[in-house]
Amino acid sequence: MTVALPGKELAGKLEAQFPTSIVESSPASLIVKSEFLLRIARYLKATPGFDFDYLSSITAVDYGNYFELVYHLVSLEHNHSLVLKTRCYERDEPVVPSLFSLWQGADYQEREIYDLMGIRFDAHPNMKRIFLWDGFQGHPLRKDYSDDT
Amino acid sequence: MTLKTEHFVLNLGPLHPSTHGVFRLRATLDGEVIVDIEPVIGYLHRGIEKLAEGCTYKQNIPFTDRLDYLASMSNNLPYVMAVEKLAEINVPERAEYLRVIMVELQRIVSHIIAVGTFVQDLGAFGTPLLYMFREREKILDLFEMVCGQRLTYNYMRFGGVSHDIPDEFLPALAKFVDRMPGFIDEYDQLLAENEILLARTKGVGILPKDLAINISASGPVLRASGVKWDIRKADPYSVYDRFEFDIPTGSISDAYDRYRVRIEEMRQCVRILRQAMEQLPKGKVLTEVPLKLRPPAGEVYAHIEAPKGELGFYLVSDNSDKPYRFHVRAPSLINLTALRQMLIGWKLADAIIVFGSIDICLGEVDR
Image (cartoon, rainbow over all chains, first blue to last red; front, side):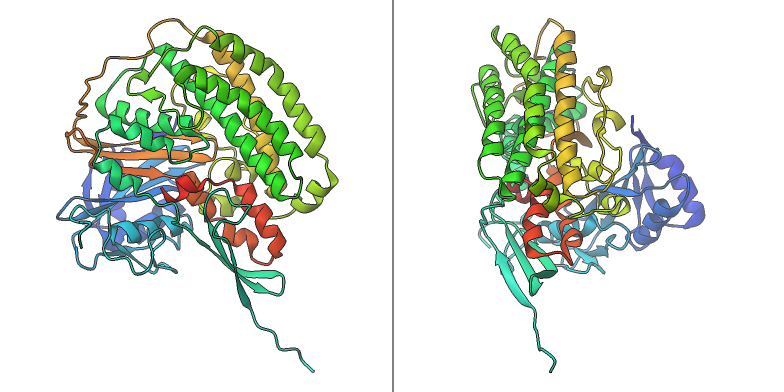
């Protein structure tokens, strides 16, 4: 059975390594500040005991006043998982760091989020639309998107 | 005199015969050698994630059928599992077994199409594919018995399955399960040591283990790279912890290994089906669930080992009757990430084989 690492305990350990990086922690997930995302992800990937070698899924949710990015990390070695999140409060030009440098599996998934949710990933090697055509206006998965525009 | 050469760009598709759906591969070539490729996708984008936000939870089950339309049963399952987790709905044991039977049959169907079209692309025109479609028809007959449909089943419900199986189902399934191993032997006689197949797939499209993990590959693609990771074992769902089966893996991580893993998985499916039939309990197949289901606010991720890899549904509920967010972790899209690195430096003719060996369904890639 894949064991979900409790976000609360992990938050303590990460806070010691990266002070002021944690926004919120719950048993099910861990929310970090976006400027720490890349560093924390690298730490979780490389630290023995965590060994999160597999980025299972990335997605984004539009909560109106902020976007939430959701990363499902798995360690194939230890068979444990973690839901890592970060938030982005900017609506006009939202940018978060890309995790492509750590997990290439982020490539198409980040492009999908850019295409449909309009969040740009900093340092992604090929940040462009993936499903919709280049001239498409707007990002349909945003809650304020309307067909008429 | 030095010869001046320049790269040229070749578009394979949209709608190349070897693609299973509408897909375009933009290949940059140096003579016959691939310098760079870029998959161009989105031709089948129907905005299912957006559509699902406007429909009730139950109305969304048929949408899942239309993701990987070659494995609709397997798409139903993680979605209903996600909603059941969210709304804390219990599933009767008989329904769990029926679900396992259906998704394992579906795995055989999906692998039959994967292997059949894969060898078709190699030039084995007709024979192996039609041999395999003979068995696929038998399974589609079984599906038709339980839900009246042959392609988009819409069979699973929150709290169980829509109908119990008819009386004639189990005898027909028993007959199929008895005969299937012989059919798989027949595929092996045709293909396993076929000289052309070996020459064209052995050592072609190698995806090293570390890269497979880094690229978030899943399913047979990951396992063919030597990673023993199967969600049915790693994170058992439904009643999978009650069955004995092996996880076939590859060692050379090439196109041939991916084909072998699928064949071996079909044998394991038969093993699981036998055990599921033996253990199948009596009882209800559906729990009563309110027609307008309003799961408590929260979020959930449920995943299964679908034929093509890890298929997951991430749902966010705001306590209304419609999902606030509906996201599909599509194995076909993510496995496609591996294509570029598998192809650079290989000949154009290999592109078709390596592409076929990933086994994607564009309905799921584009959604």
